[in-house]
Image 1 (cartoon, rainbow, N blue to C red):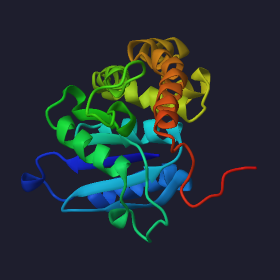
Image 2 (spheres, helix red, strand yellow):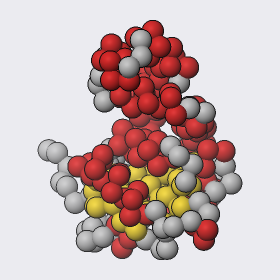
Image 3 (tube, rainbow, N blue to C red):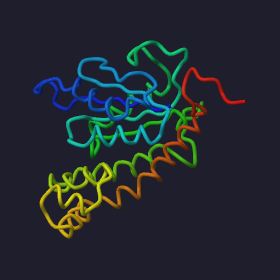
Length: 220
């Protein structure tokens, strides 16, 4: 399971943006959340999903404008589920708490922790580890961080499924200009990277032994 905890940056000097973030993330990913997105302590937002693609998409959405430190925790979510995410518990929540604290000091304000990374004796497991996956996700976060407003303008339209010629018509520019903006924004590199990152996150989840939605019976 994946728990995403987002903590607003400089919250003491900024208006509370938690409700806005919850509304945005719910509109895009609410169908894939185990429980509704929730505001926890202060200005923190917490979400739970069983889907690796959804977890990655939430991380990318939440880190887009630099207003949030975002931690992704992977592990167990205890059942039966409560009625609200803020009342849920499990190793995924502990991992997310550690991750969001680390994110406050990290490039891109993102960090990842997985319960499967630590053995019973406290040592680190060999092979697939959260640190390596974290580094790859952070590269994508930093790539997006460097994207200009003009770049985002065409990327958002391309992500919505519009063809380049249609984007050009909407923006009143030439198709060549759209192509140049998409190339500068490294949009295709991002699109081609997503499936690999989703597979790595799914593998981390499988390593915890909790790769199914809480409360649902295993298939027979």
